[in-house]
Image (cartoon, rainbow over all chains, first blue to last red; front, side, top):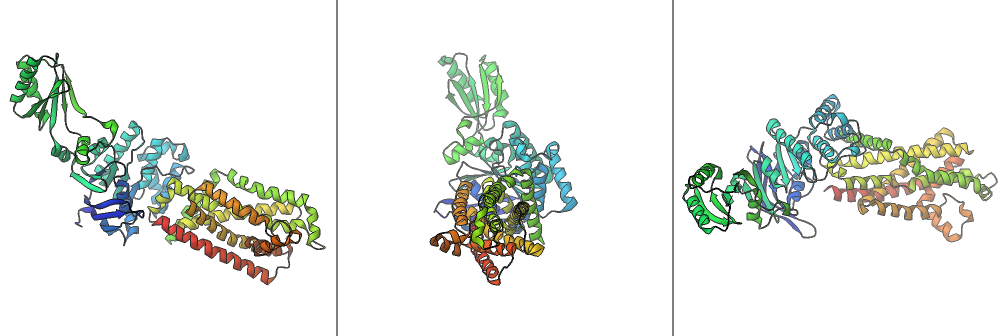
Length: 333
Length: 253
């Protein structure tokens, strides 16, 4: 393990008692200070990996080091420096928000005024000060999640594991969790290991990703690298009269001549031009069409999404509701 | 030491939870107190089977204390609820001592048991009970119940970890506790029972605990009653804690 690595995993295999092969020899590493994403559909092996890395589950074989400690030899040392936010929100609903945090701090071996100070500080950070002395059972889903997050941070962990932290939250609560996480990583330098099935989440937060499917890692890299590796941007335009074949072939010819356009194809009644970086040539497209008096009714620019990356590597979409390309920009003419 | 700190933290949590739901305590006490009051009044004449100076109230009270202990499986219920909610996993993710999870639980359940037992003895005294051995004997009654409480709660922890389901646990504890209670020397004089029931009662662990307590309430406790009761309690404790530790290790790893 190099000193800059906080997690190093080599050939990790997990076979359950019933013979299920949950992990088929995965290898990856996470550097200090990184926001690392572990992406995969349900049952791919994400939670199994987190359970092993956080000392809850014994590995079958392989070599794993977390924060410089060996998983089997020093689980207690690892537990002192990691924070874990599990998929299900886990708080004691009978205790108040403050009591929940205090208990968690005590279990992390914190004492006295240092603990009280940290509790107050965190309640403020997650905006629960006002509700600190109310039983947590009365909190909303988003508030419970924020309390759970605060309790994972009570001992100032170096490394934070987040297992699908925003599953089941409404968009507003999700966005506020994203903001905290981004801030934690940027300002406090906490390394974050995130598993998620929300591609948007991974794209927005993670600087490096691994995609896992059927217990194997199928791809890795930064979101941009992953997207560029599988394809290019697309500029799609619609014509006023799609059946006008003369206009159609003329438009295609004009687009083809623009430097940077790699290929032009028909697409759902419109025309699609493919290029490595659409934003660099969009102005040329508009000028060329204008010069030839061609007036499209709409013009769309889209880049491959992580969804496309996922489809490319696993042969399926991660979530049916995220089907289709997302336009990154739209110009109506 | 970190073990004690962890036990204290989890013990405090259990008490806070209890203080938020105090009705649970009184709901639990309802059956034992009902039995104590109804039986001691309606079946007062059972005293004639207990020798010339026999008092059925003095005979019954130790049995009610045992009944109060065995009809609930609080430790098992709470470990099941912590397994379900994921709270147990959250504790396992901290460096806190693993044994503290069980010990903190047991401590708070014991404290509750002591409070319930004190209430039962208090009500019995209002009904006219006198404890022949005085304050010393009373203390020894609490000590006995603390030990038997540990053994029985150990059983409930083992069952909770095994079944992982609170309904199953309630069903098992009812099926186990009530027949065991009625066919023991706890509630009714064994001399009025048929021979088979008397034989069962003689081997019933609950009889041993009732007998030693009765010796302390009425006076005239013999060493053999005392020693055999503690031997039985010890034996139950060894079996239940062995099972609990074995099952807990499976959950932990």
